[in-house]
Image 1 (cartoon, helix red, strand yellow):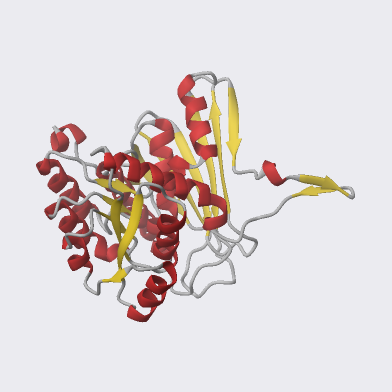
Image 2: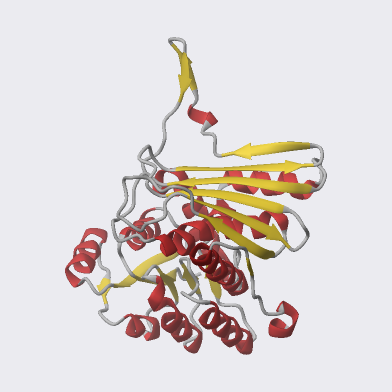
Length: 336
């Protein structure tokens, strides 16, 4: 069988990481083209990886006959147009979060895909592919601990760019825990409250960091999330599920935990690539394998839309200082 010919749109940190992944570690696939508005950056990456074409216009890359499938790693504001182009050309696509920047355009993408009668969009919520998260999901689904009642989440980055504003903490960081909660509970988020405690002094005036979010699930279960994107220490992601008969925690880094000299501890990774590198490898490999079968194997366009709806409500909660109901279309009415 011929290798899946992949084009990547956006080769900043995430897109360049995906490009290197496809070339070095993914079987059954071949990187054939990249596109980025920073042409010198795209050209340098293409030259470093071999005979990779640089196509200036991302829509031209999507329509190119030599590209079978697309990875979108461009800024979120560009996703709606690029996703619609992928659907127009019937190109399978792995789209990094967010699906789009707002609820309305996300729903239009879901509806457009549904009209095709075929799922082509997978959303890059890679935590579902992390071995620790996958093991936690399997444990909770087994019923061994009874019903899951609570989730406690921590999401900390060492630093982010000075341009990273309060709303971006919700849309670009908290969105991962939105998907985690929906996935682990197998339920929708009905209401969100985003609290803004006293911010760290190490950010610009007006930036609300850290934030504490509370999700109220449709079933009555609750999840909380601390998001702190200027933590200074490193990249730390943890999740504890509390159930009727016990609890389970992941993200403790126990595989590198050491005890010596009267102390114990371990390394804290610098960024997401160290913590979730394996998850990204598994995610992309499974996407490639599923695409070869004419399927998807991961979060759907609906999952991306649902996350966008929660984050839209989350930004409103942050701005207004109150709980906000999540406005979500009926899945049965949209998808039949």
